[in-house]
Length: 258
Image (cartoon, rainbow, N blue to C red; front, side, top):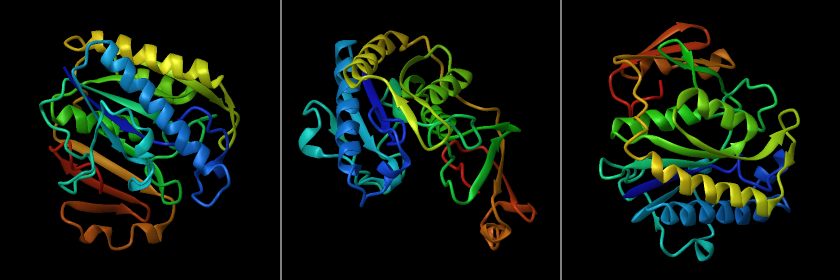
């Protein structure tokens, strides 16, 4: 049983303030160490639940966050040799986990809520349904026939995950206090939750279904300012609806961005 683990940083245990996202902040290293502990808990849980192979992807900010000396040696680190943002994920995997998730842009009390860019993206939808990065990853995995099995992150991210994926295991590691601060679950308890949820998630293989919106998909992106949409209509297949809204129709689950 092959499992693919996608990671982000905002929803990692121990990360409780926006300042920890800045690479030059004194607590950023702490955030990266916490990322590795959460990831290793998920890897351990997956193997305990019956996984025979686990691949992991460093996806926050395009990568550069893994402390490889801390990575569980049983895990394969996907360095994206093909240059694709979803890495080497393919049809050979039976499930995917999302570790460190955050809620979509506009979520009340979602810790560091955003969708792709907190600066320029205001609202993203597929077939009229607002979505964030959790659903986007679910669509990418679904393109390969892979179901989402487990998500860890803040409380609102886990609530969002259950709205898109059923059945699903989740591990809540904190609760947002507004957008930029969070109340943390004890670190040992948080990692125990992640390990146990990942282990339970292995039993969902064969039961959980891939997330595959009706095709063709109508994708709409509303940006925060008109200048962020300038020139976008020159991209193949992209239509500018108004000053801040872009539209694209596609049947490919890997073609999600206008």
